[in-house]
Image 1 (tube, helix red, strand yellow):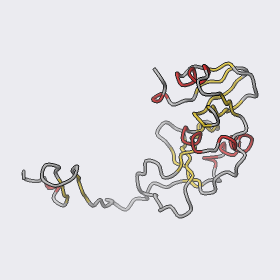
Image 2 (image 1 turned 90 degrees about the vertical axis):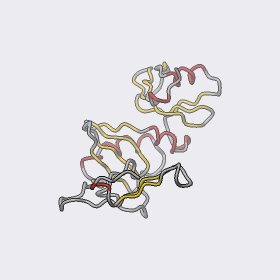
Image 3 (image 1 turned 180 degrees about the vertical axis):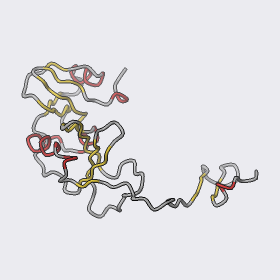
Image 4 (image 1 turned 90 degrees about the horizontal axis):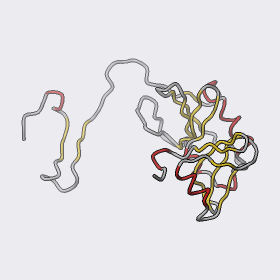
Length: 185
């Protein structure tokens, strides 16, 4: 084994060529200093005020009770639903501490793809349901806008009753909110 740096003295490396398995690195991390841990803002504050405005006219289910909000680097606030018995993640850098519902920016709530897939499509009041093999669904999966009349606002795009993602209708045009990384090329 090569000599260890002082900063790695109390760590363990399990190399895949020396131990059975894929290899691991183990370290016990302790917080340096006594500053306050990064706090999560609970629902009810101004940080998630736009969520009820999005939820109530669109979704025919009660809004989740255990909500947390966390500021993002781009100025938005990410909103998560957390189970009541979930461990406290304050002070930890949790990638997703719960079900990602979306984010709030400049007083508007933008729903996440995880919310689209996690809701039962019958519970969403405004949806565009297309059959398998539909040309509209192919265009949606490519990232194109769709021209479909209806009320303005968020629309759940479904195929044969199964959710694909969100679109936002203005006039007769549904702007595509399908994740860029998942779009068909």
